[in-house]
Image (cartoon, rainbow, N blue to C red; front, side, top):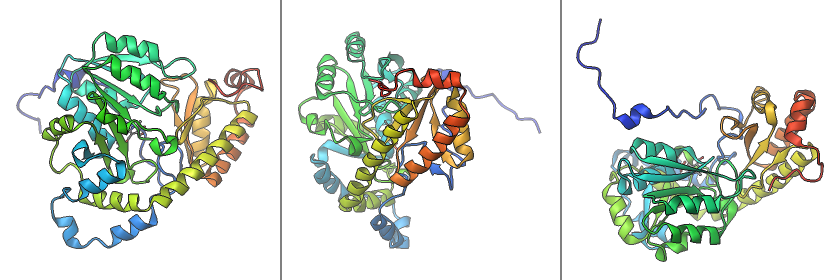
Length: 375
Ligand SMILES: Cc1ncc(COP(=O)(O)O)c(C=O)c1O
């Protein structure tokens, strides 16, 4: 049967976009060191709560009124300075929808989290990319120059994904002062591993937005819950453009239970930081260069062998993320528990010693045995 009628024409901004499809299928049963998730799962208290939800709990539309002050207390803000979002992704989308018109200039960093560019593109914004420095440190001067040329919004992750590097409070202050007319979103998805935050600054800087997520340290990525913070005026505008039901009540109940179980996150973070030290020492011992990380992942330079190392690890049931399409020869490895890290290292050592050609090893590792950590 042939179809009749007109072929519908998407908006030009959609036509211009490349599809974004992260490799998130076929991961079941593997060691998941590819998406910076919690590699063991969420707290047992959250699981117990989920099992107790009555049938009516699924039948009614979500209500957040009572939950907001509880989240606000946890994050040290007022209920008017926060909105719950369907993951950080919705927070990014809300900032774009509320403040960015088609044709406006939006500044993003590269490499960074793909969804900043994604939502700005959907909105038809003009995207200005500022590259991280070769050692993957924060490109403060280039960014200031770019935002001073005029921007409606600036998106950055601190610490940044996939580099793991972070901006200092002084650098963030300079950015906020240089862009008083831009909505500046500081995405703190990896806050729990970093320990530094600018959430308290929302009372001082009217252009500041901060996002947090329950997808990483808390192990609730499947439920999609994030928080967006800013001054109360900004929040009122943001909420006007948000669907009343974009966040589901199961996610809200789970996240409330997760923040009550503070010791779960504390223990997991301590384990990851211990595993990250082990991983970095082992990478040094293998002569593999890596960038300093403030998050639960490490960006490692394998040179021309990046794709084959990632493929061979997958064959051993270990998933890592080959990022060589945007950072030549680099693979991002999520840090999980110490036993998971030891398993990764064992496999990596075997692959690196037997597989990578001596040329690729020389290119990836460099000559000096002393200075493997870049930056
Ligand atoms: C910097 C950054 N922000 C946000 C996210 C995703 O967060 P969410 O699951 O809350 O949408 C990621 C996921 O990789 C990330 O790296």
